Amino acid sequence: MGAPGRFGQGILAALVGAALLSCTADPSRKPGSGGPGGSGGHGGPGGSGDPVGALDASAPRPPKANTLYSMARIMVSRSRDADAETILAKLIAEHPDFLPAYADLAELYLRHDHPDSAVLVLESGLQVAPKDAVLWNDVGMCRLQQKRYEDAVDGFTKAAAGVPHDARSRANLAVALGMLGRLEESLAVYLQVVSPAEAHHNLGVLCQARGDAARAEQEYAAAEALSAKSDGSSNP
Image 1 (cartoon, helix red, strand yellow):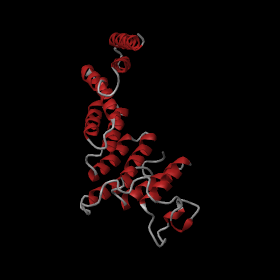
Image 2 (image 1 turned 180 degrees about the vertical axis):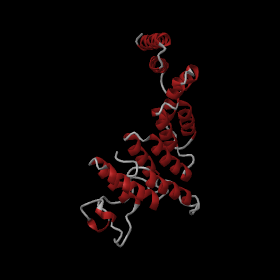
Image 3 (image 1 turned 30 degrees about the horizontal axis):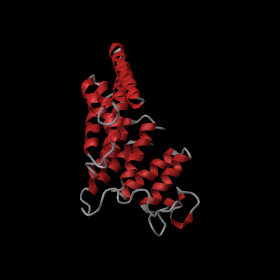
Image 4 (image 1 turned 180 degrees about the horizontal axis):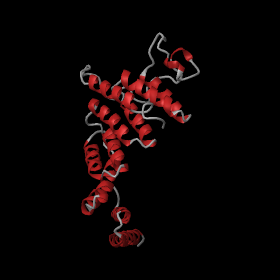
């Protein structure tokens, strides 16, 4: 993704500052109220054909959050990640309550193997919306990629308790628990979101990843037995 000075230190410091400042903003502002699906256009002020050029500070009106977000997504689709980073950082600085920008910028860093930078961005967003399930789930995913499973469990647990509710955070929590060897807890969480057969199969996959071949075979056998039983009961 380029040199650390281009991606990370300066912009991340600005992001943390923007998020801290947002804590003193008008409390009536709703996090994410300017999210995708609004009325923002795709071309930026003045109808410029170049999305990055539309960021000209001399423009009579600053770009709206949805416009900046659209620009960033266009840059990503064109593999212009450096431009996307710049736009997303600008979006967060100017509209700190626009939560999708934090998630997208973190995803950008994660894709370029900068999980710590991604977590800093997400933590900045969580200062704006401390109970946002999407941001907490993304923190967990970063820690999972780093094999920091205890930290991943913390992120996914907070995601599962946050809003909006999403079963994927519970499935991710089961993965982190399984990789820690907390197999019964992992199974219990899996049973909340998938069928018993799928839960045992997934646990077998985790055991195999941990090098526990014997337990993996045990779980695969349990999954097959449950699946056969289910098929038999549905076909009298």
